[in-house]
Length: 353
Ligand SMILES: [Zn+2]
Ligand SMILES: [Zn+2]
Image 1 (spheres, helix red, strand yellow):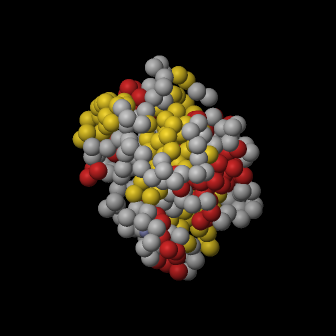
Image 2 (cartoon, protein in one colour; image 1 turned 180 degrees about the horizontal axis):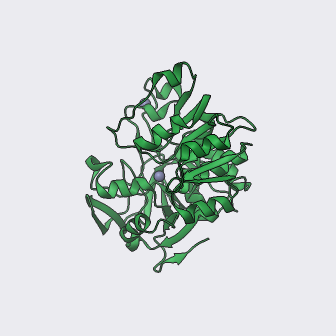
Image 3 (cartoon, helix red, strand yellow; image 1 turned 120 degrees about the vertical axis):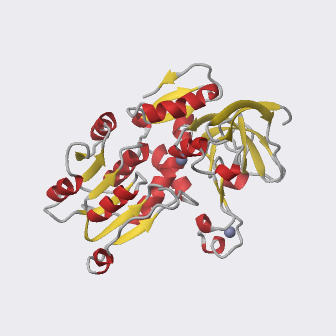
């Protein structure tokens, strides 16, 4: 398709412009998607401020998206114009040591759509057909755009292997933190504890079935989690904040023999204090989890399709493309807000959920 489209371009740190740019040209094996919804994520804020992906600017961010196929490239057989889809954003070389072992996240050529290459805060985005997943008819475009974050949470859950009846504590009351609690509950964890500091978000999590809330602005989280677990600590702890203090707290909060999931993204150079003793004599373990890949995507779609996870209570707003910058700032300012979507097709802000 020839022509121009509107796109949000981060030109340099804290400079985001809505520009007229060329519609991406679809090559063999690729499809062009008309963007219907694209979620705003903490990573987008970090790209906007220059904390992340600075060397890739100018960049069109946006990596949690859904839309409708408007063009298919040569050789694409399983997709057609009109299909409602989302796309796995994780690209890799396919032939290196890691790719050949199914560990594409570690590929030296690993790139993510909307983080390293142009993404979906635009009217159109292109993606390799092999990465595209069709959406079941009962999923809205917003839920379709939420497949990416769901795949990330599922990836972490698979790495954790939570056992039935075990205690899961999640540190962080953001959209993903609350999603982790929903998945833990669904995996049969009991009790599920959310450690956070934003009252409205915590109350939402409580309404969605979290058993205990621990407000770190009002109580000692370590003492409180120990109280709730007969003095032992939680069997599983998920760090979903991305700060050194909360990583140290996550380790302290895990019982001997328990497991920690490293999920929150810290600054690249951040370090923490660890007592090897806790890992040797306590036989604790820690698993890292970076993104949803491979079958995490179809698995996420299935869990959403059959209502095992219903993220809609976590959806706050839908804004026009022109309001992306305002929404990025608003998300940081108004901590009651959870997921905000950009929709290039609307002209007025709409409340969701
Ligand atoms: Zn994200
Ligand atoms: Zn590779």
